[in-house]
Image 1 (tube, rainbow, N blue to C red):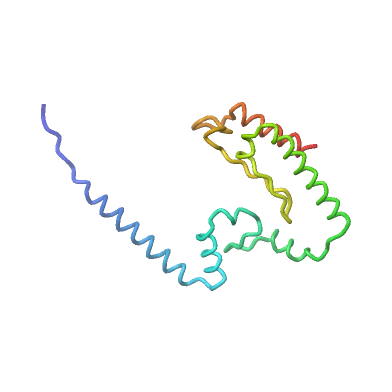
Image 2: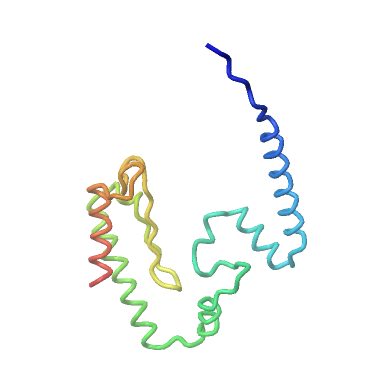
Length: 154
C-alpha cells in the first residue's frame, strides 16, 4: 500500500482563530460606539438573559407595538377591564387543567402580564413535549398543545 500524502491544513486552524479574533474586535468596537441607552439594554440582557422574552424588552430596532402600548396606558376603560377579566379566567382554567398532571407544572408556565397571557412551554427531559431530534409531539406533548389550543380557542 502506498502512503497518502498529507496536504497541510494547519493554516485553516490559524485562519479560524484570526477570523474569530477579528469578529470579537469588531463586536467590541461596535458596542463601544453605541449610545448609553443601547449599552444599558445590552448590559441587562447579559445580566439576565431570559428576562427579555416579552414585547416590553428594549432593543436596537424600535417596536411599534410597544410604543403604541406605552401611549395607550392611560386609556384604561371597561373594555380593557373585561379583557383582563377574561384573561384572568383563562389563566385560572388552564392552571386547573394543568394541575391534573403534577409534572406539567414544570413544563408549562402561565403569566398574566399587562400585555396579556404569556404561556411558556419547556421541553423537559422527564416529560418531553417532542420526540428526540424531531418535530413530532410525544403523547404528552400532544395533550399539552391540544389542551392549550382548546382552552385558548374557546
